[in-house]
Length: 294
Image (cartoon, rainbow, N blue to C red; front, side, top):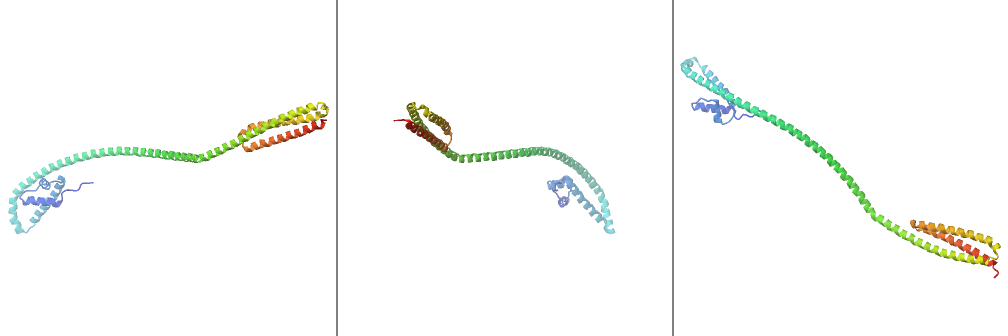
């Protein structure tokens, strides 16, 4: 973008007219010195524009009426010699101005070269900044991916924490169920102990029954032939009772891991066993009493 001129044509005209009114000969250098700033090339161009207007004024003066022209021609001839010297001086000034313009052009060319170097440097810096910007954008993209992964990991961690919290909330319920199971186990253990006591009583009754059977056999030795079949039946029933007792004992051993219902079943089986023993007792003793003459 071209720089805005710091001096105008009206200012050049004002400075030139002031110098001319003071009796001097205006030059671009004098105008620049009075103005204090501005491009020498611009001032020279505006000064030449002003000088062309001065030449037109002289030509207009030459187009005066003949009577006046004759009077002036003598004066002009006299002034030509003086004007020649003025022209030579102007030529010298023009040469000086040309030299100044050449110096200004050299300065402007050097300034342009410096600006070109600066532009190239700025272009290099721009390229470096563009590369750095690309690296930053790549790093930002990587950071965004890392942040997304960390967010996913955080969400997964929150989900796991929620699951653990749910498990912790269900822990009192599990503890209550465990307490209930322990109570049920204690009830089953009590039932087992009661069943074992009942088995002990049944064993004592069985031993008593065995003793009564021995006494009955001793008293029935004389009638052995008649009582043999009854004794076989009694022996079979006793064998069945023993089998039932062993079976009940095995079931009692497994009753440690079941609930109160299994203990009740064992109790029912023991009741059946006791009924069988009572039946055997009822069948064995009356038969011995029927054959005893006393």
